[in-house]
Amino acid sequence: MSVLLGNFPLWASLLSIIIAQFIKIPLNFLTNRTWQWSLMFSTGGMPSSHSSAVTALSTAVGIREGFGTSQFAIAAILGIIVMFDAAGVRRHAGMQAVVLNKLVEEFNHVIEGMRTLKVRPREEKAQKLKELLGHQPIEVFVGGWLGIIVAIVTNNTIFAA
Image (cartoon, rainbow, N blue to C red; front, side, top):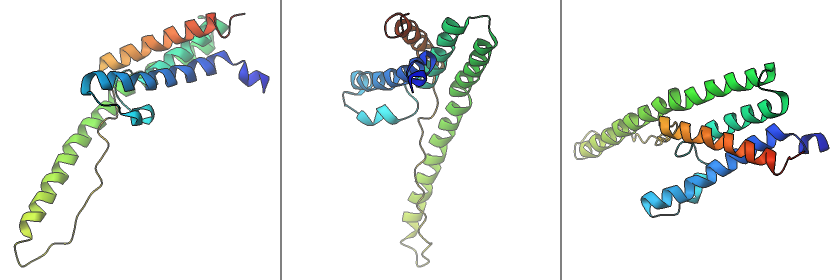
C-alpha cells in the first residue's frame, strides 16, 4: 500500500484531473453567471482534464525516471494521442451530436404537426446526445500546461525527496 501512496506519477495525474475539473466550475460561473457543479464530473470544457492528466503523467515520469527513458517516451506518446483525440475526434463527435440533436428536434416538431392528421405515427422520442465531448485547441493547450505545472509543484511540495 505504501508503494501506491508513494507513486508520484499516479498522484500527480489524479490531482491534475481533480484540479482541472474543479476549475471548470468557476470559469463557467464567470461566463454564464450560474454555478454548475455537475461540471466536476462532465467531459469537455476549459481546461481539458484529459490533457492535464497525461501531461502531468509524462512530466512526473520524466522527473522521476528521466526524460531520456523508455517510460517517458511511452507516457509522452500516449499523451500526444490523447490530446490529439480530445481536440480532434471527440470534438467532431460533439459537433455531430449538435447536428443530430437538431435533426431529432425537427423530426419531433414534424411529428407534432402530423398529430392533426387522422393517421397517427408512433411516438418517436430520442434521448438527446451529449454535445460537449471534446475540446477546442486552446482548452487542450491550457490543460496541458496545467498538468505540467501540477506535476512540478507536486514534486516540489508533496513528494519532495
